Length: 328
Image (cartoon, rainbow, N blue to C red; front, top):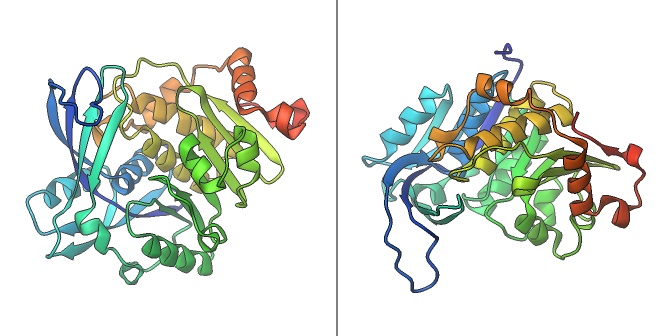
């Protein structure tokens, strides 16, 4: 594993996930007879912190709020076990956050989150930012809190990484202090405020670096005038829970370790792919060595071409091949 070269602070949510497997995700009013059931530590913030810590190369800290109940120690144990240094806000009047998750046989999921103590996190709870190089945020805590924390980090010269999930429109004031925006395709539409091609939507988001994850297709990034492509790694998926969170955590760790953007996208994509091969949230997040092994797989030119076509980079942006940076 690489030596540690920086610190990432994750500020955000922590939940206990109650996961049931079923043939398909139920529709409105439908009851589905499930099969396996498990309880796993989760929450976007906590998942991303675990992914960041397991990625290697950086120290990882997390600011989170937990209730004073039997669920909180399970989350703390998982985070500390991954090597995350905790800054815990204790909330007596709220339960620890919880998520009800149904995972279908085709590895898709439907999630309902009860925020609980997460809704009580405030910017005044921020720990000392000395030594922090990257701040990683999500939207499972109050938007006002996210904005205040992002402003504080920006004022301190810290790189702000925002995973705009769950999907919602974002105020310009938040985007103005965001250095790296990570979204899936639905979230990109919300942030951009319009439809159109992936390239068109990425172009209209005014942050220095915008990244959209595209599930089994891969991901596409726009850094100022350049586009970067990373097709997905082919794996046998069983559960997509926490794949996006894994991508975010590993990407932040890689950037903090001074990786180039193509290197960071490749490592984050490999980690996210591996996360889909295991059940659960934090339990599915791979180690540094696991990711190293998968990264020996080389993406083919046809994969790269298919991703470029899906994003409509050449048709919308009029880019020459030299302006689209391939993964290898």
